[in-house]
Length: 136
Image (cartoon, rainbow, N blue to C red; front, side):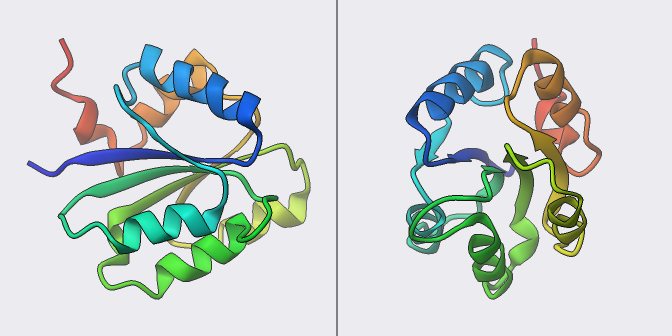
């Protein structure tokens, strides 16, 4: 069976801490990986040679490599269908929401912050719901 890895990519340490707890408490992932910017997350993905599928909780505005640059980078990777990206941003900008729809990997756009209801909705998204069907 495929392995789903959850990545939290955000430059705000308080947001990362909150999201990490919520992701674990909602059984989205027992061990989400965290990165301060898109470059760190992309380097991790690029250097991992396994068949993992990635659910990336991605902020837009970050230093070094922002969310858009991260999305552009993963589109250049072979087997880019292994990436499911949930934009989690403080941006309420309609142009940002529309731009997110241009990426095939983006499965949704949320305004910060995650909560239990949102996690349940993420788990029910058709593209990834099969990863959560064997819960006790």
